[in-house]
Image 1 (cartoon, each protein chain N blue to C red):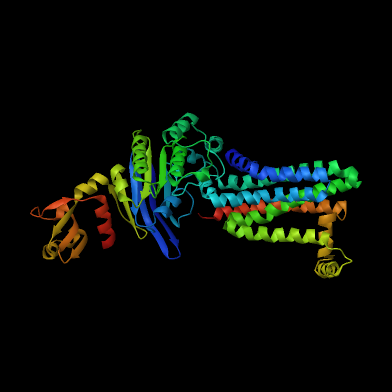
Image 2: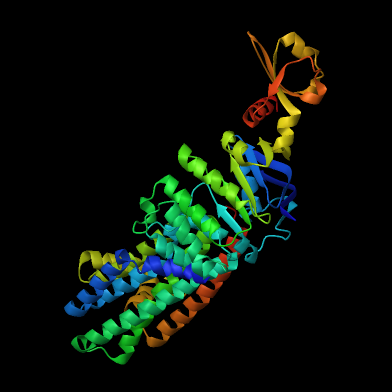
Length: 228
Length: 276
């Protein structure tokens, strides 16, 4: 597994990936824009899925089967990578928000909410993309990734949509009309974007961790049945 | 000890079925797996390497069933070498060093030098021949006892192919080493293989020692009438044209009055495949 992790980290830490992240981080710190840190978190969240894309394109997917590693190790390595990415996102978002906290008069609870949202984003994307990619190949997983990116775009749009404008009102009504149990989609988006309450975000992160565990089990089940 | 033992493996896909196939490769030998495109060579190799699951049959490599640990002793080069595209040779070596228990950096450096591979270029900029050479360098640098090569000569120029075949000969000088190589370029395999296995439309037509095949079978040019007069079992494949008839025959079943010339493995395969 050490070799697989070494391969993924070497690829991820290549200048192609590092330069945009470093530029976004610096810009976020200089311009003091919290959303730039959210972008970095999203960028890092996509990295494990992107490493699966690279594996499929370069045929490493097949080549890694020739290494002395079990299928269990191959799947587990990607989830370990996900956790490393989540930790990196938490660290970068935390540091960034701490830097700009005085400008926005953010208290510690708000800071924590931003960090948790970064963590949530980094765990949620691979948790949903990996099982499909491991079972059916990245081509199928890419569809899920696309839907997730659209979802996060909707979340961002909900933030940008001003309720006073016509578009904002229609958009807010539309979101409010879609309800899941007792909460509307707008409530859920608000929790994801604004934090809602500290407890709700904590529960979301806990649920996402469970989802990640279930996703790992599903990926193992799917990959062990996959034929090349 | 047998390096490879395949017993009655069968695999069914939609529109294609393989086997049952049984093969044995003793240590110290090279087995050539010959077959037309889509004959089942890659499916057999994939089953051997645990990439697909046969519907039935048993496989043992180096005397034991395939496991993650056993892969330390198996060097594999597939038809397309799939390594991280943006990495350099040194970075790829680091990955292999962390992966294989018996990684030999000195041997790898020697192969890189021998093959003239550039260390400062990304893998994606390599030509097909260079990629294949790097794949071989990796397969030969972790003290593997068994090499499995799937179509390694496809798309390579004759010089590189010759180099590759020399390398395989060197590798099997050690009695404990063995090679399974698949190709549809039969002339390449004829040069190096000790054993030949023919796959045709998913069926194993034969698996024999190469020298025995060349000894047993011959190429006969005669008239159609003469050919029809022979025992049907003596003819392994035939071609009748307006100018006469050609056939691959079992020398032991043909009267010595016929002028039979030695057959090449390529002729043997082509005629048998047509007959089959």
